Length: 186
Image 1 (tube, helix red, strand yellow):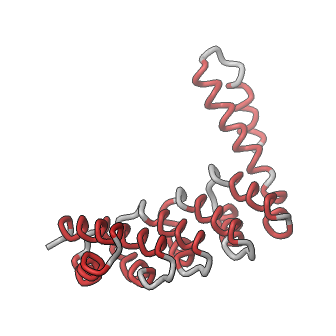
Image 2 (cartoon, one colour; image 1 turned 135 degrees about the vertical axis):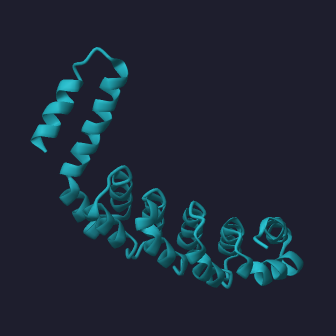
């Protein structure tokens, strides 16, 4: 890590403004990475706001330790911490899918909604089952988001659910379902 830091510090002295900016951003990430143990302590035993700050500090980092810390945050007793973890995981790619799917089952609507929102970035038919289960959630916001995700996937296996919501749903659910029925695979 010292070699990386040395290179980045050297780049801060360059005349090229974009290069200096990139070096500064990279140096900041390197600094955050060097404090992973600090963030681990905050996530494990800090106050709620400290935990949320620690989770968001991990947003631009990659790696197994970062994933482990976000998975821990997903198990926190505070729903706001779990929701923050979901929002950060939304940008971590397919590696985050199992945690995001688990978040769909969370009893706190804010977490389940954030999970459904995050899953809308993926157009993966493997998500159809968990999203169909989310249609049974008592929170209408979760149902709306899950239905939208299912519509984006466009899998014909969801036709029956779309037909149901196109007829029996509220205005928003009907709109989502009607649009999906028109775009769905044959």
